[in-house]
Image (tube, one colour):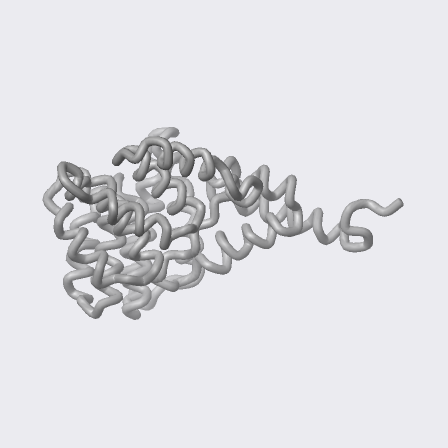
Length: 255
C-alpha cells in the first residue's frame, strides 16, 4: 500500500516543511498551517504563489487568498445570502459584500457595496474603504482616487490600508510626486511599518535603491527597541524588509 503521493511523498513533505518554515518566519503560520497540512500539494502551491511569487516588486496588489475559503469555499456566504433575502438591510448587504470580497468575488462585492450607498448611508466610511480595496484589486485606479479623497480628512484614514492603496493608485495613474507625498505622510519612527515597507518598494520601482535601503534599514533598527507585542504584530513587515535588503545589497557611498 502506497502512502499519499507515492514516490513523490518525500518531495511533498519537503515542500510542506519549506512552506511552514517560510510562513513561521513571516509571522503568518497561524493563517496558513491548516491549509499546508490538510491540503499538502494544493495548499503548498497556493502558499508559494500567494506569499512568494506574488510578493515581488510589482506594485499591483497580489491576489488575496483566504485559506479558510479554500478549505470551505462556500464559507458562510450562503447563510449571509439567505439573511439578505429574508431581511434586506444595509447591515446585511455590507456583511455579504465583505464576505464576497474576502472570498475573491470582487464583482459581486462591488455591486453590493454600491447599492448600499444610499440615503443615510450614502457616504458610509467602511463601505467606501472596502470599495477602495475592491477597485484596487481590479486595477480601477481612477475610481480609487475620488473615494480616497472623500475619506482623506478622517483621522483614521492616515493609518489605513485605504491610504496605502490611494498612494499606489496615484503612482499607477502617473501622479508620482503626489504618490510620494502620500507615502511621506505615512512615514514615522517606531510606527507605520507596512506603509514604510510599501514606500521602500515605491522607491525601488523608481530606481532609488539607496533611499529604499535607508527605509528598510531604519525599520530593522527600530525593531530592536519595540515591545514584544509590537514586534510580533509587525514581524511580517520586518521579514519583508530583510528580503528587500538582500536584493538591494549595500548601495555605493552608503556609510
